[in-house]
Length: 323
Image (cartoon, rainbow, N blue to C red):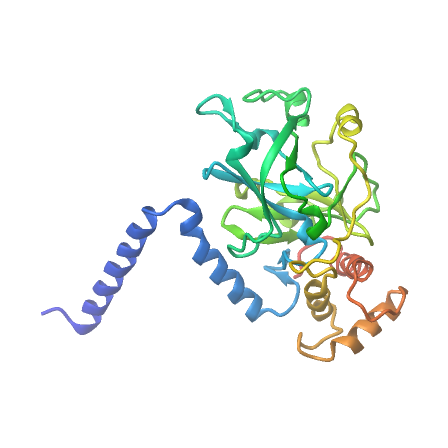
């Protein structure tokens, strides 16, 4: 006779196997939705601070400047990270727009960009109108020239940047710049991840995302917002012909986006010991932090405060994961 304990174990294994079988029948995006969303929400409930796993953070995509980031969904097959750089234009990898199986470029109507994407919320979205490929990029060519020109300038039907703001773009960084990597990665396709210690002075193996999780964009964060500062530098000719600007812009009044990074600032205050929990007196903690950081005591969780709090966090951990 099978014991009650063994019988329960057998039923559990059957249920697990049945669940795995059911997931295999779903598309990759469907299979990831519930798992990544539930896990990320649990982590944020367990840890009211900014850092998760000691070297990265999960972001609220519906607040500036993270709202300038989004997902370019291509023909229902895959997605890649995109960054708004003007009211109607974004930058994304050119390789994302080419179908290696059918040896063709995807048509604009096959692509949709979702800005500020968070947990299946695609409210701020637009079909692609047209795009340009950086001169020198050749699909399936792994040469250095092709890799360095792996950029596409994409124009949208709708001016999403008016609602989300946009990032600046630069081809130069400086040693004291606060460099981060952020975006959507494999296994966390429905929530933005930020690696705040992934800068020029740290070891990629400990502070940056692994490449098998998909490439994230590199940014320099300033007191005004994000500036796209890609490792594969955009060629000067392309930068000029596409009329890219180094200056970020905050969103205009929008019903969709919080114009200030309140969620991020509040959670950073927890990690930096200004708040015991994120339900404490936020105004008092914010004012104290602004005074300590020698920035205007506005008591507002603005981009300037976010920038200085992230600098303090980097200094605290010296660009290394917390021990």
